[in-house]
Image (cartoon, rainbow, N blue to C red; front, side, top):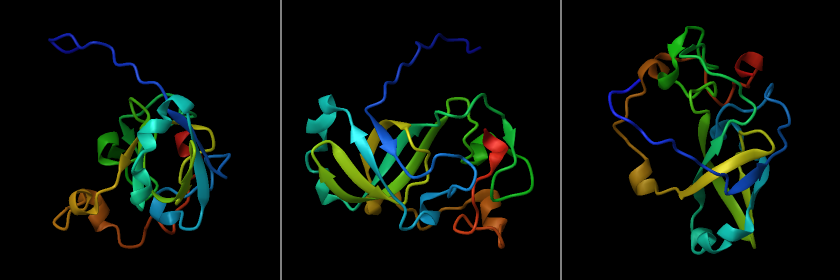
Length: 166
């Protein structure tokens, strides 16, 4: 354990993400591989006022809980590789805190329902936060992507999830 004490962090969902994906096997592994796949967010009523001005954004980054993942591994074989990698060098769901992120297209907002596209998460996923996507700040033209830069034949658009992260 750490030499200093850290207070327990409690996070509660602000809504539920609804998608056509009822099983982990066969799902897209990234939003870019889910073009045309729609879903919606059921935001809890007490957070409705926080949606003010979100309709002006084309995309949002969703922070959510991998609610059907049990346990974690510090080394995993990610979907886009055949070698084991450290969990923090991947976006694999079997993480110590089982938190995921996806940047999705905003199709429309009606009351507490946000229609979205490019959904790559399971139906019923607990939503922890919504962040507007700022293309000016969220994109990095000089980014280096480690082992992923070496992959020439595996792309998220061609890959689908399988049973390895249940």
